[in-house]
Amino acid sequence: MTKRPDIICIGAMLWDIIGRAGRRMGAGHDVPGRVAHIPGGVALNVAVALARWGMRPAILSAVGRDTQGDALIAEAQARGVMTDYLTRRADLPTDCYMAIEDEAGLVAAVADAHSLEAAGAAILKPLDDALAKWTGSVVLDGNLTAALLATISTDRRLFGMDLRVVPASPGKADRLLPLIRAGRGCFYLNRIEAEILSERPCPDAASAARAVVAMGAPRVIVTDGGEQVAEAMAGAPDLSALPPSVRIARVTGAGDCFLAAHIAAERAGADRETALTRATEAAAAHVAGRDMPDKSLAASATPKDDTI
Image (cartoon, rainbow, N blue to C red; front, side, top):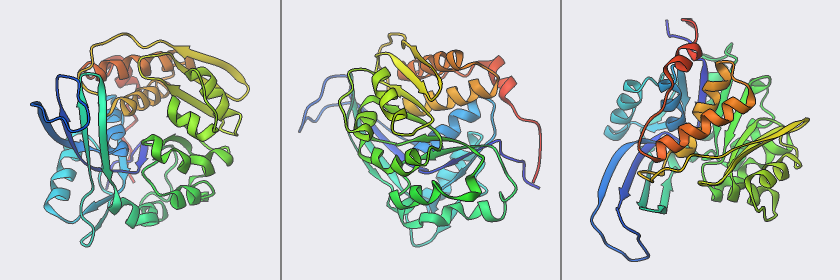
């Protein structure tokens, strides 16, 4: 028997290769720094962060039948992520992401999620068998193809589930349009992604969140670097929170920590304003180089022991 997950993360599971320099960088610069090789991908990052908050996440993704895939699965399991429902194919290598960061943040990045894209709807097969009777929250990662996200927007297997949607990067933001038009999900965006989706300039997170809600999204949360975070929700008051000022130690994964902390806070019974503040603080702690799962909140977010 397998323990029952209390949340499913659908999307990228890959290796992150992150190079960080302690000085400002420009095109063509070659400087000393540190290079880390760590488990990553939006869906996996969120799942790992949720596990730190005491939840039991499962991931639906594509991982190669190669040594990199075996090692990645072992790392995910060690971090509390259920990997029972992965799609593995010998003809697809394990995906990877490469980024360069400097003292000001992200300089450039390349995401190779070709195996996830090639696997397509096959990663959802567990919803037909092992997870057929499962209901709960689902995190959707914009690394999924536009075609698959469009299919998910009308997929009856996901009707009634609490969808939490994140685009992964500005270049993939428009993949979320079918879900927005279908009025499905809570969307976690940065201001640039919100501007791309709404096709209008937005001076701040609050106006960006309202612009996407006006398109049909039921609920939108927009971050803006170190500036004010905002939440807009159809039929409810707008909210905002100001991130604490921190010294940048890392950037990659901050949005995933934000999302996980927000979900965990709401699961623990926090109201909208408290959940937004909690998520903002967690993201700032991540940027500062710290992980911040509140022990009392993590305990209250832990699901009962169940099996399927």
